[in-house]
Image 1: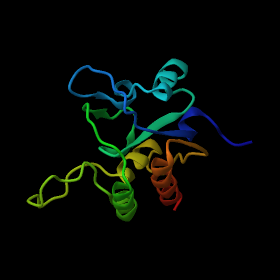
Image 2: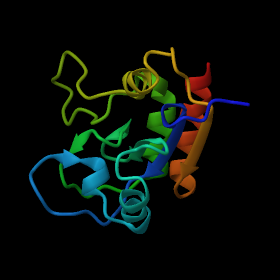
Image 3: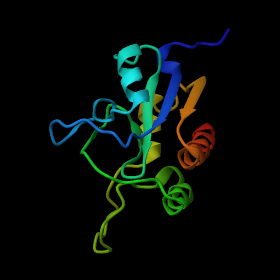
Length: 147
């Protein structure tokens, strides 16, 4: 029998076009307000059933407790290509100018490492929820996480 404790399950949701107002920065799981996010907050408010992450055109892949600002951005085929090409080292938010010497933003590798205690507690169950563009990136990242 496999260990399916909450720390060993991962739910990756796409972001939500509907967002809640509030402070400038708030956890993604509280900011997003689409039906799936409302259901998540009702059914598993403390992430006992699964750890939760999200994929966003604006913020990339992050743990759902990461704080985010309110924003408007849609996933596009171009963003999918950029995220997949950058792999686990893709830093998101992408820089707005080419002037930055050091890359800014956070990358999927740092978030998945934190969520799995740097590989000591890998996930045994993963659920992906989102539209086709989001699922394309999510599936690619899960394959890279497994490697």
